[in-house]
Length: 109
Image (cartoon, rainbow, N blue to C red; front, side, top):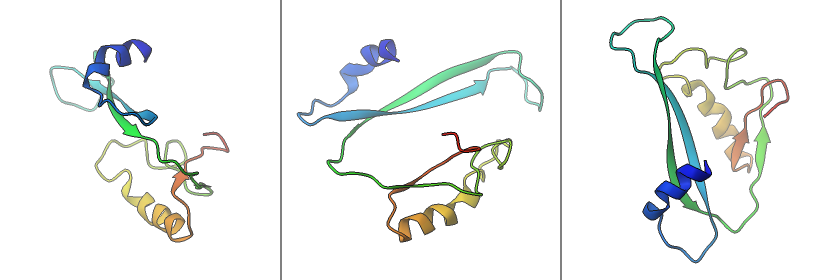
């Protein structure tokens, strides 16, 4: 990560305020044919997005009985609707004063 940030830091805005980097890792198949099977070649890449820190505490609701990831949830399928069933849970958390949800899997982050 340090090496990647050093390569891309010229793209980051110059700010006097402290910041953080949102990182999204993606792992994709690079096979030359389409199909449902274990890929013979893959690529791992990261998307970096610098953001400014908000100078306030965040409140998060720890998930309970709702699972974002496999094996207890629906994350074993790669379809556009993976996060849709979570929207009501996130909406309820925000209605109750939370900023976001901390997704747990068997009490682990």
